[in-house]
Image (cartoon, rainbow over all chains, first blue to last red; front, side, top):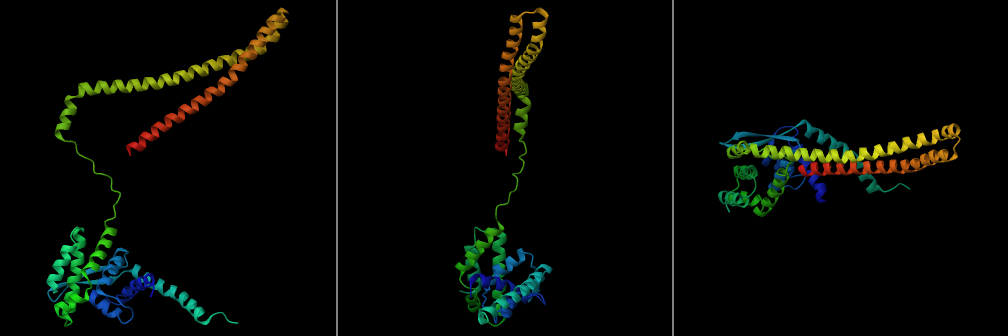
Length: 104
Length: 195
C-alpha cells in the first residue's frame, strides 16, 4: 500500500479504535491488526500526532500497580472520522469507475 | 534482551532529547512491554515486538524536533546590574552634558539643512514677485514716462526673473523631495537595525 495512504488510514483506524470507548496502546494494536498492519513503534508517533492535533486526549489509569495510558477521542477526532467517511464515499465511486471503465 | 536492558539502552540512546520526550517515549514502551507480558509473553518476546531501538530513536528524534521548533520568543529584558547603576549615577555629570550637546548639534544640522531650502524658496519667491511686478508695471511705466528704454528694462527684467524663477522652483522641489526621502531612508534603516 502507498505509504502516504497507509499513514492516513492508520490515523483513522486509531481514532476508530477509541471511537466507542477509551482504549490503551496494546488494545488499540490488537483491534487494528486484523485490518491493517501496525506495530508498537508505528503506533507511538501516530498517538502523539493525533494528540497534538487535538483529536484525542490522554489520561493515566492505575492498572495492576502500574500506570496505563488511556486514549479518549475528542469532538475534533469524531469530526475527522465523519469527514473520512464522506471522503471515502467519493473514493468508492472512483473505485467503481476504475474497475468498470467507461460504458460504451 | 530483556525489558530492563531494553529500557536502559533506549534511555541512553535518547539522551540529548528534551527530558519530557525521553520520559514519554520510555513510558510508552514500558507500558507496551508490560501489557505484552501480561498477555503471557516472556520479557524477551515482548521486547522483540517493539522493533529495533535504532528505529525508535529515529522516530523520537523526528517527533522531538517538531515539538521543539524554535518559537519567536522575545529575548528577556536584562535587569541592570548594581555596578552599572552606580556607574550611571557617578558618570551623570559627564555623560549628560555630552549627550545634550550631541543632541543640540544634530538639531542644529537639521535646522541648517532646512534653512538652506527656505533660502532657496525665498529667492525663488522674490524672483517670481519681481517677474510679475516687472511685466505688469512695464506698460504703466511706458505710458507714464513715454520712455521705451524703461519699458524694455522693466519688461525684460521681469522676463529674465520669470525665466530664472520657474527652473529654480522645480530644482528646489526636486532637491526637497530627494532630501526628504534620504532622511526617511536613514530613519527606516536605523529602525530596522534596532530590531
